[in-house]
Length: 181
Image 1: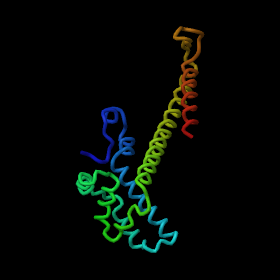
Image 2: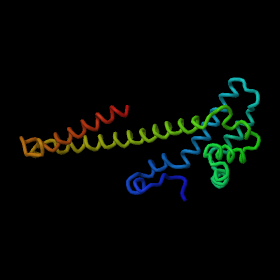
Image 3: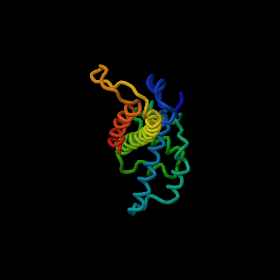
Image 4: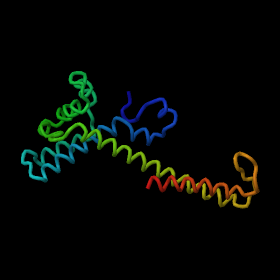
């Protein structure tokens, strides 16, 4: 089973590779590891003498090589995803294993990762939305003089131009962009 893309019937049919990665297991568990590193660095900065720079370096050295086999096997035993990944990371970082997740709850990695994933997804949507607005603006300019009928309540109404109609679509997208901002 791939770990670098999110899989569901909807994502497989409709989501792009960038969005699938954002919601993937790889993104999730790499983010957990980055959060554990940030936690350890902050605790060390605040004076927790148990944490050493060597431990931090060991954690950083293994932040991207998720050992899924170890985590899956451990989860069958303990039935807890976070503790399974703490254990798996600890197997790769024997010197630092005692400080991984130190003082945190499962919500620390779970909730913060959810927020990071949503933010990354919204940034991708914003980037794509800006591209759509740009292309529609070019389209509107190109067809600014091409006549067509406007519609109201799905009924033909007064004459307008295709370009003018496109500017109305752009306006809707601009409101979406404002909401994203």
